[in-house]
Amino acid sequence: MEEISLESEVHNKERVENIKTLYGELTVTIHGRLSQPIIITYHDVGLNHRLCFEKLFRAAQPDDTFDSYCIIHVDAPGQAERAEELCYLDEYPTFDQLANQLSTLLDHFSIENFVGLGVGVGGNILCRLAMKRPETVRGLMIISTSLSRCTLWEWAWSKATMLLLDYLGMNSVVRRMLIRRYFSEKCPQAEELSPKLDFHNQFNLYKLICSNYMRDDILHVARHLTCETIVVFGKHSSYRQIYSEAYSAFDNRFCRIVEMEDSNDLLVWTQPGPLIALFLSFLHQL
Image 1 (cartoon, one colour):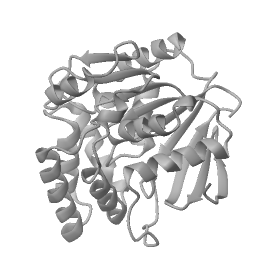
Image 2: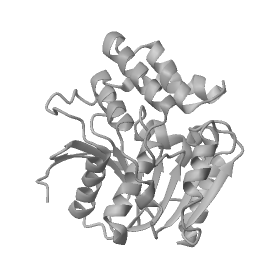
Image 3: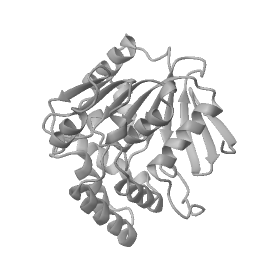
Image 4: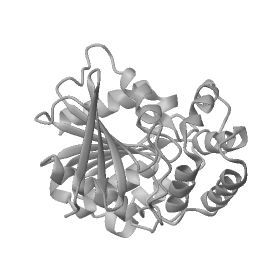
């Protein structure tokens, strides 16, 4: 088991904890009491927990409260707001190592079981945790998540974005590249999100993008998951065929596929209302 040092500070109703592990620092933001049922979220590449999930949880109806849950938002190493450059890491953690960080998190807080909510790469990492620690996962909801190796388009996007970060830093061109990953068409949400992407430390973002495009294929193992799982993606997404073919092999006793009437992949921004309603319904059925 990894050795952990812990620092915490309180911001209004949330508690921020910085956990140092063998794979770098993991920043978690905790809402609620750890004695309550646990929800763990993990964001997509290029985002942090606030940009990924704040709009989603704010879309809940007044009668739909999360006060009875403890929500633990995870920021990948170096991706939190005001994160310092990860100069002490020779290599950024692999996706398996990022999942190992979550396993350490479970042990540290003595979490016996939880429900996972992941977007993009966050869904992939939560699936890896479910494969490593199946007894701890009550359910998973993963949104626009690929469990296979990166596609040719992803590889080209990653290489181009990393090159731009290396030579130009975090600028408007890199922001447009990130927006292109999340949205397949122009929409008000893309214009709203773009200026908020400047929180990044460019070195840390570069490292996470590199880790993402080097991820291995876990479909052959993940399709045997026995936790309740909801897979969500846009019906008109450019990745629809890839998602459909991959998840159709999952056991339909445990896995439910939901296609939303959308062409974008960042559904937490374009479909927050329907998504949060679906998630709440999922929680009530577990």
